Length: 433
Ligand code: DLL
Image (cartoon, rainbow, N blue to C red; front, side):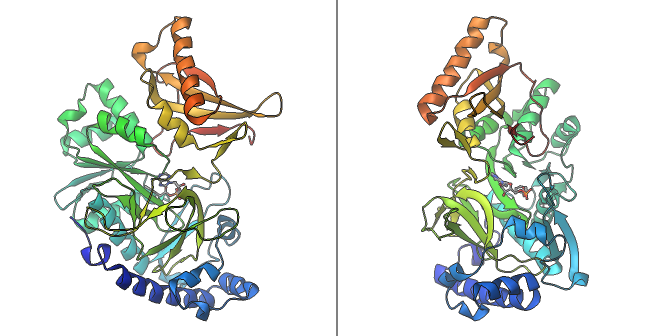
């Protein structure tokens, strides 16, 4: 089913007409209401009236994460403070948190786009949505909650953690849809096994997983262990939270709710707009938000766009699952790799478990050393060094052949890498500690 067929399957020309009208309105609002943006426009010598067609957006200034931090907490507010009804922030682990302040209008937009996303992944009225994303300042919990309510799903607000209870609830309330991070779903599978709970006996049909990078092979692993179909959901606090895009039944890219979030792909070095199909940094303009709307926000996420009719009936532009982030890219002896590429290869090796960490340190010769710590599948774990050496060699070869990189492999005991109930910490960069 499609939540809003009028919008999600709209004729492209009609959609572009509305996007242009909303863009003009947004740019005028930013200029008139946000001194930060007025300053940017003036210093770059552009005016709101410079927007005559959608392509003119490329003449407008970008907004960066640093801009958000420098204006913390309310410097980018485009509405009256008394009209803000809710705020969320990012976790702020890498500095000042970024803020999203929502007006009543923005809450309605959020529920709308989240309802679309959940429905793309098969949710309907009558479904029981078990929401394992964290509630609170993180947008995952409440974002899913509002969307599930809009559809009329029975919503179980369990949040992250308390995994045994989570699984009991799943069994007792016959949850049909699970929402949480992909890494947490794998941990659930592990706990279920320890509890003697067979996932095939439960009622889950879909899992809606996101908020962290995961690979195609990780999807297979989760689908098998959790006995469900796993869908990718994408979003970020700055833009609205979850609800920016989601996979449909075709699982061929994530449909972007582009009537609300206008996407561009740019060359991260030059800022130049790239054509559809080319890889680059994803940039969003929030066409309809009123609390903290953003113009050309640089996400640092890397992907590409694809347009056209989809067999699901929607024609919203699709983004490929994220390849990585500009700031996550590893350069190992001159070769650029994203952690998800390493994960994808690791998942093909039957002797290992889907629990790993990448540790980067300064090497002795001033070149970076990268260690891949990975858990061994219990049935292959032995005290015999020869067996462990064989597995280690197998991983080293696969990384060398498929990615052209040399990693130090460190095999560790099953269950020794810390499990995550939210976003997993896969990369530990000791150079910055
Ligand atoms: O993670 C919002 C969210 C909640 C998305 C629940 C999906 C589900 P932030 O904490 O602000 O917001 O983190 C946003 O996480 O820029 C990406 O780098 C990464 N990310 C989000 N979804 C995905 C995904 C939420 N499906 C940042 N695949 C983004 C890979 C993702 N990375």
